[in-house]
Length: 336
Image (cartoon, rainbow, N blue to C red; front, side, top):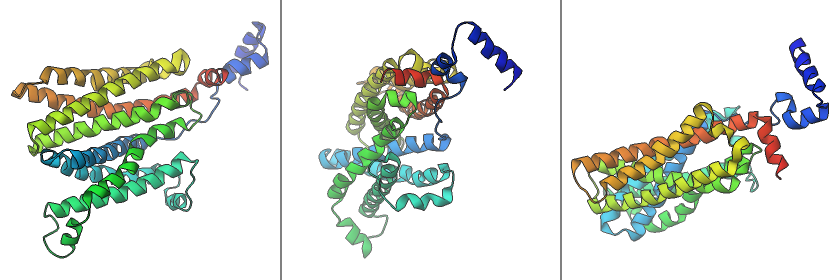
């Protein structure tokens, strides 16, 4: 023990604080729990996985209920879903401390383990996403017109999409549940909000990505783009309510990482630039079809995507800081 630490400890003892009081209130300044090792790869996985699952759901809804004018949305959603899910397994394997042991997670299915369910959910969804994209490619003539392509085109794409929507919903929201299934104070405190928050954010991100993609390629009608914009607006309003609820529910101690330093600035940027600003831009462009209105819509989509990525960054690394704060841990356990 260093001399400086002994002096600080002695000063506190002289102020009338016992060793038991010091341990209970500060844990000697040391973290009371181990923080997760998750880094940038998991943040990117959360972001891309959310877009993949939500875009698949949007594509399925467009195919089932959208009519002919929503066919471009269904087509783009299927392709986008596959492109964004492909990096998922690689990012998960890279994040493991021993990547060569990834296959060990496939030996069993643990229903009480969010990590195990997540791996198997990702595998199930990847199969449906790949099959739907394959059917779409065959329908678009990318696989030719004869032989296997004809059999693939004959597959019931609506039924495949409907069955795949379950794993798609799971992938979009389970990442929030995965965070909550830990001892990290910020995540555990908001265990009821993280799943819906990640789900609404995934939906807004996917719709924004589809809007940008279809606007750039000019494959969708203005009516289809307006329907996407309305859906994005609903998802953003839900996300805003959940973000405000999360901050209020965290309290001053557990929610400290969301207020202070760069993470606090980033969280405010998520609220302002990632949610409120796109809503305002969409309101300004509503009902207009000028070049300026279209530019406002495109800017709103870009801000939504940036805010979605920043949201996951903030929540992951604010969780790290929350785990490092013994006061947050004691605040959480004291109220339980």
